[in-house]
Image 1: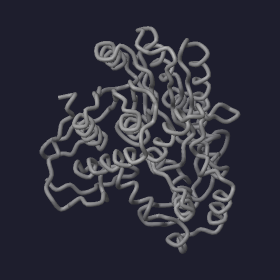
Image 2: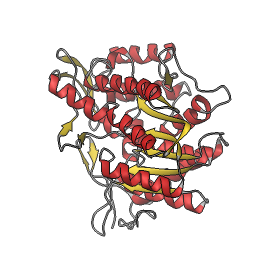
Image 3: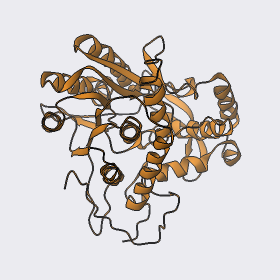
Length: 393
């Protein structure tokens, strides 16, 4: 079938298998071009099918020569319906990895569930014995806990209404938006979904099963951003969850012998999650323009390659700030970058959006999340939408 993007709200309900494969290939080629890193050799990536998780898996495999197990939660396609982008990404990664002689297997299921934890641990014990790195990169909107309770996250400020500029990415219209504050129960639920509780459960389960090496490293991802986004992010319901994630890192390091946990604070990028956050798409569009003009722009793969090669496993050891965060947002938060972004922010409107922000770059990155707008792909051609994942088939 011929596959076209069908965008509904903040998601695209179709994905292009050939485009996804080409994008995965380009990420692999980028990591190969940067040379080898003396890093981990048996890496579990929880949330491995898109964004930072996928780029982490590629960086571990092709930068460090690591065997990888990925945990995903994606749907396979059929002859008349596309799979999710994460499914196609994973199928492509496994195909490339296997052809290059790299171990790569995938478990598809709810990473919050005990069943998936047990399945992954059994696979690790059977094939590897133990892992030496765990990447925790879940970006789920809801979580079902072991007692059957379903928690859903919200993207809201805390303590009062928040009003600021936002953008309709499709039309380029800039307007003000007011978001009502989260209730205490919504904050609690958001922490349950996006905080560090499940991360710690994963590491604890691996430790209890003797499936994680002494000296192992685990990393989870976060964002802080500039003051203009703080009410909806750092100081909002998501920020509460990310504070819990940071506390979990310290708790893991303190209570689980032989494991050191880090939180990497990454750059603002176009993801399914960030697209749904008021204010953030407009900020990212401006940031892209400023950082591209300064030659500082990075996507997910550039960020993760730098994390592995420089921040975690470089010759100087792990690089952290005074709060023990790894800062991959260091270029974004440079004083000159933020000064320019805020100057544009103050004066931006629908009338000058095209000149003042990289809206086309934002749209392209959003489309590429789902395999569209990739270079060299014929989007008028029929393609096989029922592709399988080798290790799952």
